[in-house]
Amino acid sequence: MQVDFPDGQSKMHEHRNKGVNVFRALSIAALFSVVSVMPSYAGFENWSVDKEADPFSGGESVSVNFMSSIRSGVVVLCDSAKKGLTVRAIPGFDYDPKLEGFKPTVKFAFDGKLLFDAEGETGAVGNNLAVSQVVLDGDQAKQFVDAFAAAKKQIAIDDGISDKPHLLTARGSTSAGQAIVACIAKQGQSS
Image 1 (cartoon, rainbow, N blue to C red):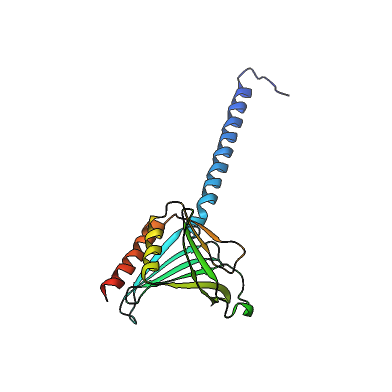
Image 2: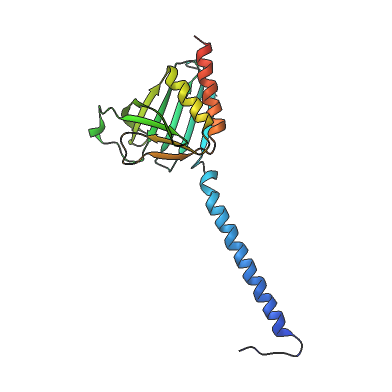
């Protein structure tokens, strides 16, 4: 029931309620915006790169990472003083001794197009997490880094030990890709 006061107080309450509703809507929208971008701020769901001088090899060590969760992701490792690069896919489950000696077929696709597959190996990293990794060298390493740097939408890796492939966004792959392209180019100069 609305009571009309001669001095217009009921109108003032209407305006105040509209202001509260607008404030609530804006607050909810702001909260949704922050929550939807938090994974990228936490280093998840985008490619990142770390470079540092390696005193043992004498080269530059480049690590390109994509973390899907705290327990899963993909790591690309390159050292400018060595040949090739290593791609590690970590599906997020614990290593099982049944994986020992298994040689998975690791497949790489960029923007929906299969690039190639390669025979990998299995092992464990960190807190006994299963890993499927492959060492790429020569033409395969060059094809991989060129396709990686050119990816626009998706980088997909089938690790050969999971029930589904790693379907990763290409967000951050341009700068990360340039770092591994440069690393492979430096390897060619040192020979």
